[in-house]
Length: 327
Ligand code: AMP
Ligand code: MG
Image (cartoon, rainbow, N blue to C red; front, side):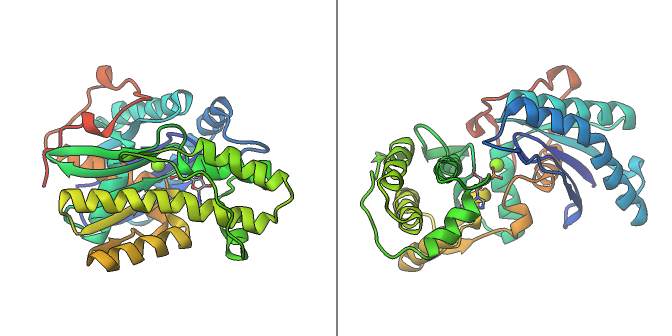
């Protein structure tokens, strides 16, 4: 079976085509803000201008591989969570494709797609997933359906990093720049470490780190102190979920998962607990269309279909709402 998936919950506009075995085509056209952070309306405008040409490139590459549009069996799209204006553009494009090609439509939960593409590509059985992106930070594991065992009480860790980076005069996205600065950090300054039960919070940490920077502390040390604090919070809760659930696999997902220090801390924790650490390839770690395509294929093969009249976007779509009918 072949599924074409469209992702567009925020900055990433991406289309992927997969079959049961592998990713066949993946094309990206990300929105990059000229200044500041992601502006939902501007991002949506970008997506609406670019989604047609993006799909044109996908079909061209499929043609070169001998795959015709009518060979596609299912159209999947990111139904939420995400920014309403962006979601609507991608849902509209998916509906048009579904009606034009006369193929079934499947609305996919974006967080679920991060987890399932990781399980697929890493052969993970039942991992605790640390999903860390711009908008989301969650610790997810399966107990029947998927459940969120811990999450941010305010902003996502990626968003926190981007806010600090912007304050320090660095361009968006700040993650890779903060990472480079942090590598040259030498002195650790104590910052608010906020874990409440299984949840955590980053906004106080951002405010304190901004103040530290304004007080004249070296940017390298601010970045270093920030990363050590934020990542220790995430690793602590991931470890607690592993222990509580009696599981022995950890999967990383989301753009912040590219950070080498976070990965190192997770690996050390996993080694101590004799758990395996899994990471999907970089192109499938951040937001991408292939993860939507794969999850759409998985759902469709287990009886899911989203009729056009039920394909409205869900900006607050939670992973717990999805009934999981597969192993
Ligand atoms: P996503 O929404 O999952 O695609 O992730 C986007 C977020 O990942 C942005 O907030 C980026 O700043 C962040 N990010 C990307 N690369 C890194 C990195 N190397 N370290 C930390 N954060 C990163
Ligand atoms: Mg994401």
